[in-house]
Image 1 (cartoon, helix red, strand yellow):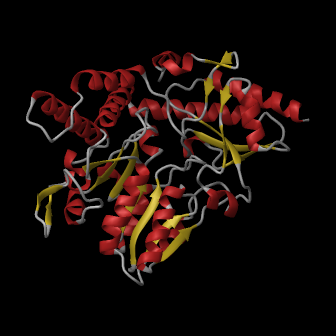
Image 2 (cartoon, rainbow, N blue to C red; image 1 turned 60 degrees about the vertical axis):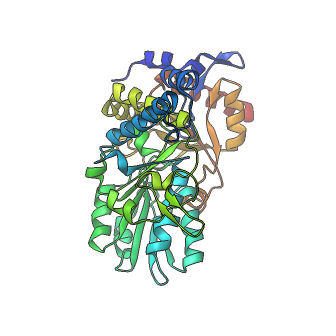
Image 3 (tube, rainbow, N blue to C red; image 1 turned 180 degrees about the vertical axis):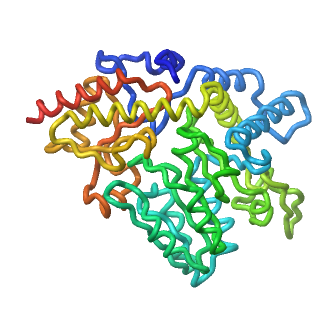
Length: 407
């Protein structure tokens, strides 16, 4: 199990907020960074900062080796067959858009359909809406039930021989729900459809093996998994990447350019136009090292323990509505809730005065909140490796105080 002393690895958690101990419970929005990640990025900028792939001098060659080493770490972390299946992007959103534009334009046609679920983050909804308007395909939406579980029977009915892609979250950033991706992949593949997983949340919380997952694409976010912002990755089967046209044009993604035409670099560099975020990649690689040292099985067990504890504590309060699964074994480290008579924004403001950081709002999942739960916003607490039961106790006490203040 992960010990409370892990918290000491995260310098920002030593801060006092309004004179109070800092309880950071917004890790679903972004995770804090361990000192090892901060140091790795600092060391790169101090010792190795140069443009990668471009120079034959020592500094550039060292920077390139570190950059490509980070790619290899990410590949090993998710058990990819090769580091060439990892494309560095700015974030998971860009990874999904890469698939929509590069693969979608080439493979989805008028009369086809793409299937998503109602609980998707906007990043896994809007690109498919945009592509649907451009390519004139049907976008099908699978429901979730009141417990926040995806309707697998409806999903199977919606997947037809004209379905080209099923795009689904690996873990809901609102409900914590973790759909059975391997089962969904089998459903889709039987009908000839491919599967994209928005792994922005899941990769940071549960062990991920893309060979067992059965999906064809996986989007990864660096800042959700203890790494820096501005870096993410797309994993895709190499044979798919080979057939996909580039997403962006420019430097480093080319093999040769004439005034009339161009030819493309090998994968994955074909999709990495321009100067890459090398320092971000180094930070992501260091985050992978940190998580590997903890063990992703331990990370998952730690968060399940925290979820079970938090659900128990919240249910002792009056006037609390909790959204999504109430069984910690069926969700990741996130709990969305509302307090009767207290707007989520007011609650978040009052909790901040007690040193507790939670998220309030629609969480970039407006269709889920509106269509399934008939609310415009919720409060949300979410956990990571540095979260402790003391953080949860501090939050629950602050909620009780907020209820008294609001009458």
